[in-house]
Length: 219
Image 1 (cartoon, rainbow, N blue to C red):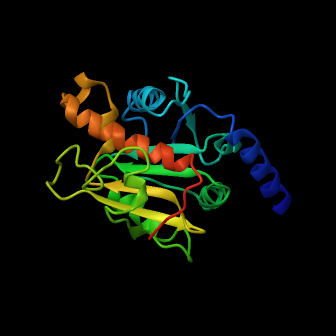
Image 2 (cartoon, helix red, strand yellow):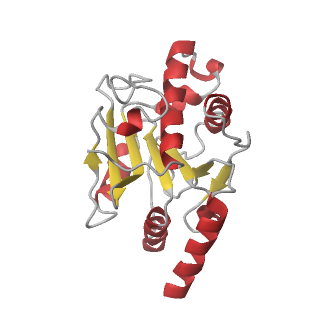
Image 3 (cartoon, rainbow, N blue to C red):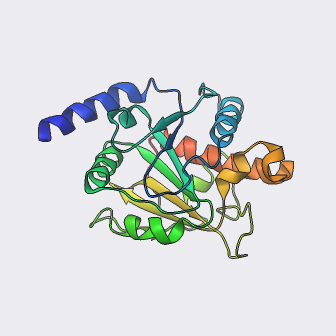
């Protein structure tokens, strides 16, 4: 097992600097992990223009049972429903995050009651914790004065951001009551204004910039 982990870590670090593809996480449980098909291509295009990245317009689909997960330093996860991870998949997620990977989980409305208990128990020594609007992740590329933006109303609750940190660095960012990914979609999908979509894309670019940087938490 230890030898396998070392091999996987080696694969991750060798591919990390070469990977130019964002990825979406496919999971079991019945939740619609595929619900925002135009989101990542638009985020990639925005980052290419705003951050001078060279992401492919085609995103990858990965699962926690796939060794290829280590080829993608930034993974996005979304959906409206149930989420089920096996014990082996949870262990793979821990290994991925400890190897330097970054995952953004965006509740697309309805996922929270399923995913939050998983995140609360993912690392015994690194609990899921709220992230204030003063955190550097909100200003690393674009200044988000009020922190996590609210893209869609749903229950009219304020948007909340939570994170898991490992060795002083955010490795998992969970956005709740914000629906950031919907704001990345093509304009005609949700009929969001250009202002709202740009706000969502700027937040997404901040997440990408943080994931690919060597920045440490400053709070």
